[in-house]
Image 1 (cartoon, rainbow, N blue to C red):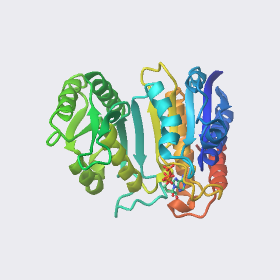
Image 2 (image 1 turned 120 degrees about the horizontal axis):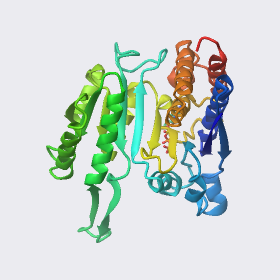
Image 3 (image 1 turned 180 degrees about the vertical axis):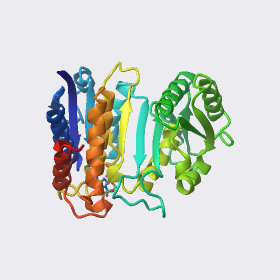
Length: 357
Ligand code: ATP
């Protein structure tokens, strides 16, 4: 029996509701498969922990997480704790501390869920966005001077390194190569940004030579929004900088129907450290405790986690179960249904146990 050690950090808002749902589905998968088990340890870190201890996680939090095979993360953010504390106190130290430089965001229109794009249904939109997750525009470099004076200045410096760009390009080309269409779009803004983005383009061309079977093209980020909206079928795997992919993946989530179905994985491709799997959405305080949070994004990221752990057939079974349930119209209100989190979760667990999945 293969055993994988999972650290679950449900954290804030609807995080605990969707992580509980995800753990139920993972339990059903273990029972159904019988050849792997997950040893899950829960951590009570997050905004409530901050209110008691003055920190989002203990000082040695990263050390505590190191022995795990993967981290299953809910959401951070609380109305009464500033965003920079919740974000920089828990999620970002994990991403950065474990050098999870590839942020992988699959988007697909699930059966039974309507896209806001007219005439676009399941099969027309099947993308994976790879976001550079360690440098670029979010490197934290810059500063402020002459505060409050008319000559005040603020700089926000984007950092692109050859090592950073090469490794994310290789990851994206390899991922594109593993998908049936072997198609990669490299997003850039090298017409206006003449330094880092031109280097990004050059490195893309260099890495492309290592993958002769992958068809690739380049798009300026502004034109990319138009292509995503008008020709979604023409795209498959997409690689973009930290900022560009951040924006494009929100658009992708909206085009697929709801933030409540969008998953993400923060991957250390070299597997030196645990990778982290989470729904894209935040803590959604407006619906916290109402029992209507959509658990689909969390199921999907659980499938990404299983894939990463080498449990590909369990990952496929989980996604088939989710698609069977959405196709049946068992949907939470954010995607036009009336089901609760618990009803969707129960239906997915039943589908996992069912003989036809
Ligand atoms: P944060 O500041 O933590 O990112 P937020 O409320 O600004 O939180 P999200 O939590 O990402 O942003 O959610 C935006 C809106 O989308 C929420 O108000 C919520 O109604 C809806 N939403 C997000 N996730 C879900 C979900 N899983 N199920 C249903 N609705 C959701």
